[in-house]
Amino acid sequence: MMWIVPVKPPFTETLESKVDLTEWSGRTLDFPFFARVLGVRTETVDSNRTRNKQYWESMESGDPLVVYRSDTERYAGFGTIGAKAQTTYFDKAYWDDAGAISVFTVTDYDDSLDLEPEQVNSVLGYEEEFRPCGLSKVSDDRPIDDLLFFLDVNRNRATM
Image (cartoon, rainbow, N blue to C red):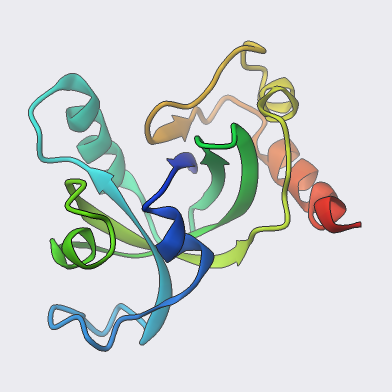
């Protein structure tokens, strides 16, 4: 399974730089001492949050993800899902009480992408205008391997 994760401030802080998890009293052995962390809003009762909760629950460690920066409208990075937990710690400590209590670490993160949405949409066969508005699962019938290859080929091009 592959995930498209839209990110905007204040969540960018805990994605762009690893955070010290040793101060989190709820940290389990699944979580490293330092990690990149993202969260999903799952607690409000509406269709988007219900979908987010279902998606978050089905995420597995090692699933690939691609990060879409909502504030810049660019695909900016990719990595894999790490450990997951339900906690208010990050929401209160980093995310201004945004309501994101379903959290996960991002491992093997590469932030060297700078891709227009149309480029990713073309590879996945999405409509050109598609913009992810919430956590999205890439359907298994989409060419996920082609996208992973495309992302790998395009890494570091933004810095060349």
